[in-house]
Image (cartoon, rainbow, N blue to C red; front, side, top):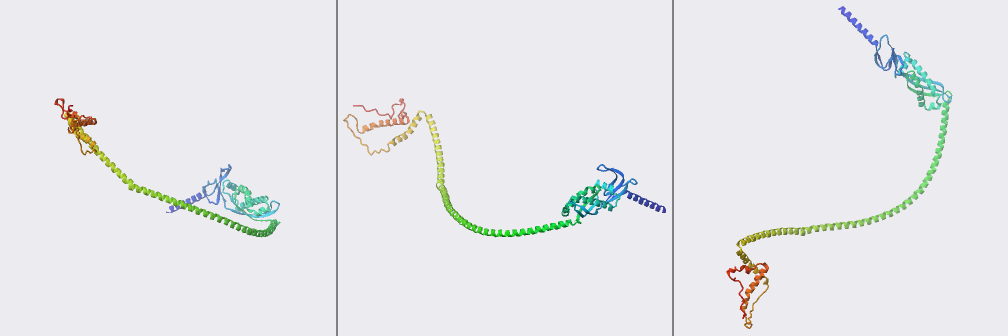
Length: 435
């Protein structure tokens, strides 16, 4: 049991020893400090070779025995900058009080400058060096400016001081955060005299300005009265002109109104005539439609009806003609088949119609009576009724000749029998012998 206890103590002591060794080798750097690890050399970005390396924040492990760790603070160092009897432009001694804030720069290159100059140096000493540098630069800037410029434009003075001291501060590895001028005085009361002079000038200018303002006020008042009188006259003139213009404008408006009335009257007549013309056109259209409905449409319908009727009648006539043609064709075929007898039959069938046609030529002749005068035998011939009867065969022959001349058909020849059959019954009797 005792052996295990001793062994545990040994292990615990060993662990504690190891932790202590490791903690001494591990370097943890806070953000407001810089660890400067000396012992090994390295080359900077600008080509310089230094024998240390730097850690800003984070952690690293140092090599025991070979490397050594030192610390630098990055906190701000407030400074009270003050110069007395510093000659400005014009050989006027001035006393200037101001404040400044400086710190060790954390930029690469500047931090190495600070490490070379202020490693293990107390912060108060760093501030004193920075203060002396700023005061020297302050005197240099004062020598380029007049007391009035220093006193009146302190912002410009501070900016020139910052520009002047920036290079020197950076050479030391520091940074100038703030530089403000608080007070500017002189032992000879120069600025006070300048102030009184400026005050007197201001008072003088104020009095002159006041007098000028009063004169200007009186002049303005006189000008105002003059302008008022002129304005009154001008107003009266304007009133007269406006009245004249009003009368002219009234006359123009009256003329325009009369012209508008005449135009309106003419436009009314034109509109009325246009309306009557449109009404007449409407009436003509209505009459045309009425005539079309009452006359044209019925006439067109009657015409179409008559055309249809004519077409029907023509169709009937055509059909009747076709039927008659067919009848004539068949009769012709029958007559041709009958030979000479058929020709006689055809002529005999036509004879009544022909006679009717010939007789119809004398239908208008009315014979009331026929008187037969017998001339006796004084002339040695027959007279009276015998002579009349003797003329009938000649009349028949004459009629047949007329029919032959009209139709080309010799009726007597058609009715005459063949020569072998003897003389025709219808042949005219021989004329009586002469005495």
